[in-house]
Image (cartoon, rainbow, N blue to C red):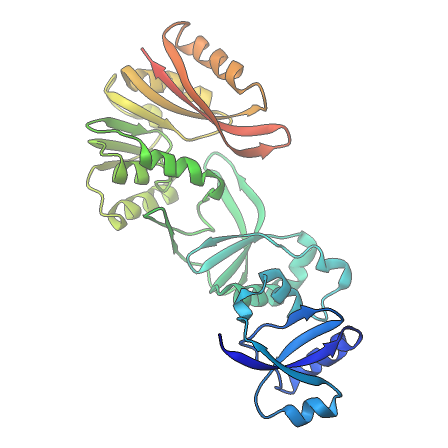
Length: 340
């Protein structure tokens, strides 16, 4: 590993000297400032040994740990030395990455500093654009509420488990918490099957299933015109020829009892669409039913829904798993249900 010259800055002088050393151009910004007992070891560029001596700092040689290896929040806070102390702990420490675009959840009190925060986050995280997720998603189309902090608004491509998802974070949602379920859809054996995705979105579940499961044909239905446009684009982007996109309400899908498998990747009002799913399902069809339930009641409430629409003994819950937490004491679940 490359070695660098380091100046030992005592802890009680660090807040004064380190900003001064950076402003004078003494610090090697490609290497990491490290914490040691009693102070900090600051990497110094060659030729400034005399200046370090004048500051009363002892020099040594050590490994040049990359600046990029430091925790991002440490680097972000360091670039905001004059930021109000009472707001530092409210800085977003989690983010979603979609290609060159990053979204953060931000306290509204921080919006007045949006431009400077966006620039710092972009520099540290290597992003071209930073957007704040103002209030999550809402409405029938689950549309996001985003505020641009830095860069430009536009499309980005997220690569996940061999699938490319193209989308605009200001127009459509992308639920990172569904990662395991998207991967599971790609691992299904759908050889020869006709599949219907009733809530396709931009292809969250459609794309991995169509690409990796050996399904014969996938009908992907989406009502939101923005999501549908990205669905069509993503089908082409991933080179898929077995997906038929359908724009409109899934209750208008023509035909009956032709589906070997049905994806119902929606939540909260999913039960309203069970009659249509049963109309599309062949005997023996497997339905991947998503919904939100109070923790511990997911099995009983799923039974209640399918008893109501399907009839006791005409279905079997063959699997139940939690997708992610949805609210306090409420989770998003997916049930695998075989109908007869």
